[in-house]
Image (cartoon, rainbow, N blue to C red; front, side, top):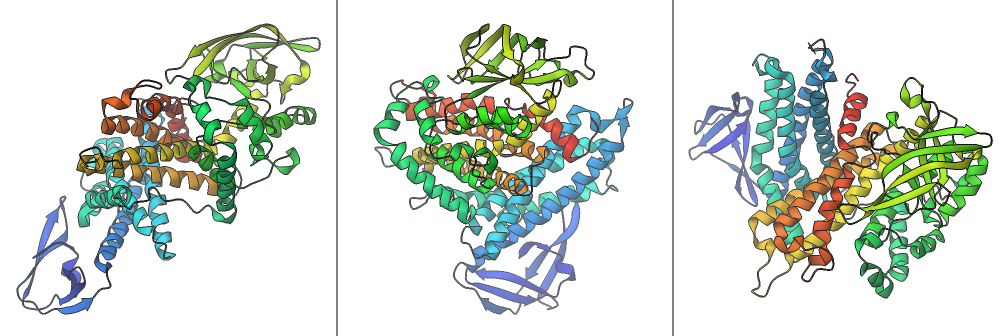
Length: 605
């Protein structure tokens, strides 16, 4: 008896596995074959096929052929489930634009916008990972199996959750069986459970990652130039950031490891600070894939942060020629860091209502106000947003951007410790006088400068986050595989294996979103909604990773840096505390979800 055979009632033959090396071809019109229709998930279409000494034609398979056939089948089912979920999602997005409640379209409600933004993130993740696995298969790349299992493992939960959320947004109208949406709900669930579903895929992922001969997460092909740069940077770090120099740096408390001036100057000599800058500004005009290669290798080498990317972008896009000639070379040489003076006590995500003022006084601007949560407070300059027209309508039309030297008279810095052991500062500006030419862009044109520079950076910020998670995963994997004095390892625990496989699949979704942003950047700027999708997914993945690592490693993993017995000098608990920053900074994930809903889905503002 063979269950869950699709469309058997309309087919002429059945292929059935006799063993792992032989398939059997059975004619369904034979008297010794009985086909019984089966209702599953409330839908007809599957059958139970009963074979009673039915004639069979054997078909030999190559070694591993059955496993590959099953995996191809599961990948195809994931693709079809994605199509069903996507169709229902498109229906509910149209519905949200048109359906009015409480005097306005329901698509304007933040609850609906964020629900649908979550659905789009899941659907894009599945689309990209399925496509990637299929491309690798067609290229006869042996990694196709790994990515196919990642696709199946992720798609099962992600598509089913997207289907549930679709029906939540539809409300009662989608609950009626004559509506199209229930058909897709049933299709998604049947396809993601068939042929072993996610459970089998995660078992195979765990084996490829945690068995003794495993090599960890696969390395992406970043093209000839990207791959070459990765090796070049790896070699440079081996010579310039290793041994005693790196060890001495790592002995410092985390608050002292946020920046290393000597290292920044050394990197400055390579020109890599300006890796993606146009050549006219002294940059190397490298591709987005080369930028990823650089970020990935620096992360794996655990090198300190460098550069002032957002501020440099703003200067290249909106600065005067004199400003570009003055500030860009010292950024490029690693000699100057610029902080970002945006947030205020009453203006966090809503920067349009900031109160810090800049008033013209002859040949100077006079700045007064307070900025909070400023991380790079120790830099040479502050890239400061200030109000130059208090009566502007809308409010963001009265903001300008300035470069403020941090040693200027009237600047008072009050550092504070962050919850992740880093530092930020409250900074007070009391009658701070700066030259007129320290304004970047036009007077009252600061909103364009601010958002333009951030948009340029956001395209790869999600990639930077997921690369941090991928590196931390490899550290966790080593601990999980390590055997104790009894010869056992955490990787022997099936629950640990399942959770590690889940993380691995999600990391690949994050890396696929990163690669997609890089692909879009090759044709110009990454659309802000796609940068937001990558940032939201990867930021929240970092949080999930941090929580999972503590669950797996236990209480000892909560010991902080420089405590006796701390695992990796407190790496994992500190990562969790640090992860909160990545869902808040450069626009909170709630703001990002609204951006996704409005820009990518066309929902009303």
